[in-house]
Length: 565
Image 1: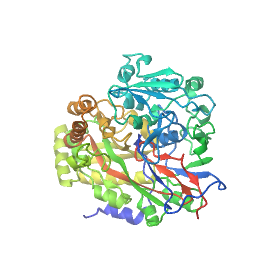
Image 2: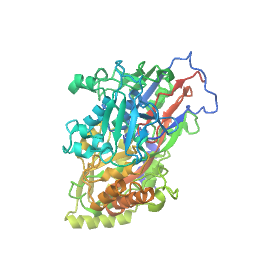
Image 3: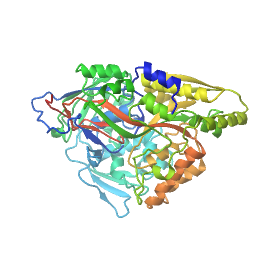
Image 4: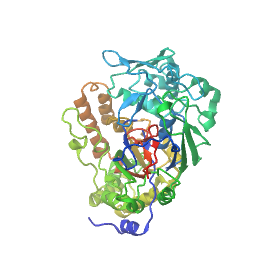
């Protein structure tokens, strides 16, 4: 395929950097020993158990009911714990839960015992009421939680009614039967219940502590209390670029946590991160999604790579008159060369995405076929067709020119990818002017909430191992929609998948496949770009590093520092 001059120049002249972090949600995991898997694990008793990590962004929030992004969720995953935790083998295992739950016959009610030795870092016991308080708080509109309603409505009994002011907090389907017994009542059976409970939105919160902190809760490390493997220290808030995690002595499983301290520093430049890694100033780098740096480490066993079920796309805000036109949206979605984007700009194992639900993520419950088999590619690159649709759309809105604000990230790779997208869209679609605005990740999240953009480069990773983790993003007025997309047919398919088809796995799966066709093929609600592959550098002496394919990205609980050369 012929490469554009722009992409070739990038390959020849640019040193690229780490791409923006996706909004992320809960699920499975894989682990790595830093590329030294053939060696036996060495005892770490005499080796300092300290880890130095570089992150790609600051932490937007350490309040589990407010967090929506990858960085925040991963930090919460390591400092706190829900009823369940995703382990090194992609399985939900008991966290605060004391063994397996007791379920009623139809799977709509679970009775769960809380571990007797589960404590907060201030020494207070973790109780069933801590879960009740946190879940109710997440559904209080005054709290401003996005994931509370998103994760709970349609799942936890009366969650929607409570959020809409049609029920009282005590009506929510979560009760403290006694201090250490929690009863959870669902709207319908949920096959992925334990995986869902591992997601940070369902973490407990110490009511007494939260209320004592008031509006300061979660603002700094001193305004936080923890029930997980580590406690955060030296964190001054969302603008801070340095912080540490220290082992939480009160954690119920502290005896199996080897690391004593993890030092974090933010690095948005991958070459600088690689230099710090080589200088011994970092043991783990941020994800390196750029060819200039990755090429230096091809074949190096310190480079760890995996394909994520994470998709990046352009969100198209239909509050904009031009973007409210379906032909203009389709034109934009088909106007950029995805092969060049993945092969020349990223060149890191990522693949073109002509879909909204990723490859190698979920399979049909009866046939075992990948979700992608039935729908194949949707909204593929086609410059000529894009131009025709563009001209048709412009005629329909009575315009000859359109100027759109493109909201992107502030990392060097974000800027490079966004520049490529601007070049492709403007060159393919005559009369289009793109104004790229590169902002920090926390600012992008805020502007997403207020829909202060026309086009936004964004990404999504699944909250749990089910296609609806992607599908329900685009429900009318959904918490993560934030682009004024609405389609009654789409809404019905999603409603059916969660109600009448809930106990018919095959038909439910097929309804979600049909929904994908609606949002892409019929409406071009979003413009998919690529499915991301991850690459990072990790020292050989880091054993037990665990990355998760869904949910919070990393777990440090099982890491041990060895004396490997």
